[in-house]
Image 1: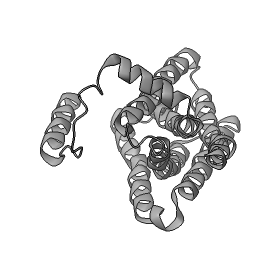
Image 2 (image 1 turned 180 degrees about the vertical axis):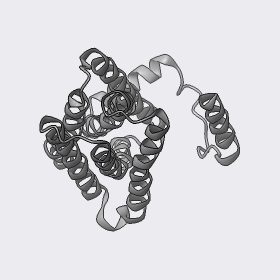
Image 3 (image 1 turned 45 degrees about the vertical axis):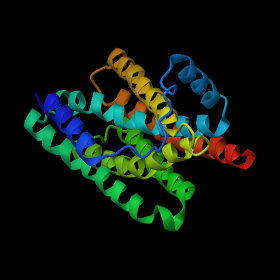
Image 4 (image 1 turned 60 degrees about the vertical axis):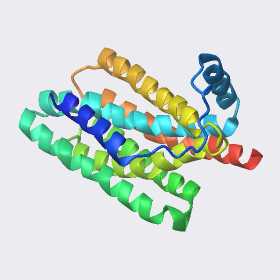
Length: 232
């Protein structure tokens, strides 16, 4: 019911609150051959690929929380479903705060510096969660706090990586955004399957996935995004 309600609300907001900005419509833009050609063009661009990989890796930590936090907190740590809902909502405050802060300060410090700072946060939070799982110091408070930090970092990073991925293609930004989003969601789907297959009744698979996501996002920025920028 909630999914249907939010879906309807999203459609209404889109119809009422947004207007098409393009002045001359390209009637061939949605032709399958044109879309395929654009996708091929995007995937050959190092800047698009680097930013998309960075964004996707960071987003995998969010998918990890959505898939694994409930089993860990309810079945392993023993919180009730109602308590879990409250804890999950609390951690999402980090997402909201990160979005507000990044939107306010990205023009001052720059897009790529904001990505770097977000990468440090997601890598640090993911690594700390893995240490907690390995040392058996995991708790509800630890999970919620570290994911709130992770979400803050991700919300600081993701809008900037998407903007960076679209920058080389002002003539096809919408198509580029669709491919970038598809890669991110496809990665989340594969991660969901992997988490389901490796669940062992502990917090370790969740922690490993979160650390991989956060550290991977930071490394992809350092060793893929930055070199791509220098070549551009």
